[in-house]
Amino acid sequence: MPSRSLPEDFQWGVATSAYQIEGAAFQGGRGPSIWDTFSHTPGKVVDGHTGDVACDHYHRLEEDLDLLVALGVNAYRFSVAWPRVMPDGRFPLNPKGLDFYDRMLDGLCARGIRSQLTLYHWDLPQSLHEARGWGHRDTLQHFTDYAQVIARRLGDRVDSIATINEPWVVATLGYERGIFAPGLTDRRLAMQVSHHLLMAHGLAVQALRALVPRVKLGIVLNLAPTYAARASAADRAKAQLEDGLLVRWYMDPLFRGCYPQDVLEHLGADAPSVKPEELKLIREPTDFLGVNYYTRNFVHAEDPNLKPPGKLGFTDMGWEVYPQGLTHLLLRLAHDYSPPPFYITENGAAFVDRLEGDSVHDLKRVHYLEQHIAAMNAARDQGVDVRGYFAWSFLDNFEWASGYLKRFGLVHVDFESQRRVLKDSALWYRNFIAAQQPWRPEAAGI
Image (cartoon, rainbow, N blue to C red; front, side):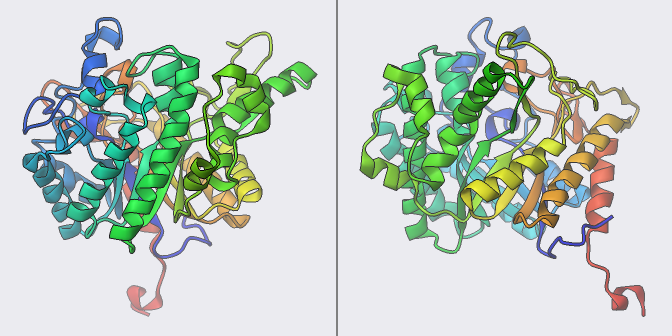
């Protein structure tokens, strides 16, 4: 049923990212990214999978845009591949790459679907990585140049632009833990990278604001509430630190102009080098905050692998289904930071799907979506300003280090034939969105 509090212009959408769906990795003038290099490195991605072909979205653009219409969404979140537009991460430009995104935006406009564009979803051009990548401040200027190119060419047709997707993942999983590209294990570098990513966000917002003042600007963070497994002092302290590294490390500089002192003390010599003027830059005003939510954090001081209770079960990623965490998170963020309006920019679940003819009966995913949309609405009903919800993901895709084994899509993809099939979750989402339209007496013939 429709939420009582949802405005008519609420955005119901689906989300993707370039490397996960586009394919055509070596076509159309695209340059290599760190994910091309990482996925082609033996042992980095399950079963040696790569994003070379992915969902072949580059060649199946019109078919996929028609599928968005079939889903009934009014908004689509996608990312531009930096190395498709600027193969080396710097000038010169690749005209064929820009032409592809031109066609995409024209197609979305023709279908009445709003465009939510993300500038950076982890595919740093390889040549910039070889010049020290996000660890070098020169990359910040290259990113700003790239943002200006996108604004000038595509900014007339987009509703919003997000600068960076999930800087925690880029820094922590890519530079500290080494399980995502570029595969480094250097905590000091990772923390400096996290600061540089936030600076790049601030610089891009300034540049974009000057070029496309009507476009809504923001950043997307992966956030989760952290719960102590026990009431012990050790577990509470561990939960506080984990919250500091995941939530406060990014929210504090963005909305308070400082990094959390307890995390700085924990990092010691690994804390980043930060200048006061850089903190002012990071705090550049924005129009929205994107929140990606999948599950909660559950911590135990002595047993880091302890699983949470999982009363609603677990996804195929091993993540607990915990919808109430989204309500708690949104209420906490609104109370502690008074940020701009929220968009739930990613929310979804991987489950083991079985294709049966022309159907995928993914009831667990339907329940997951139902529960989390209800959790979002519970926060809205308590005053939190949420303007949109984007299910992750539109298509089954290349799921980073998990390759093609984990399926998050509302649309099933046969990666051999590239045949698309709407899952039951897609049909449910379509019907749910249709039910959100405001009831008017004249529409009922009264």
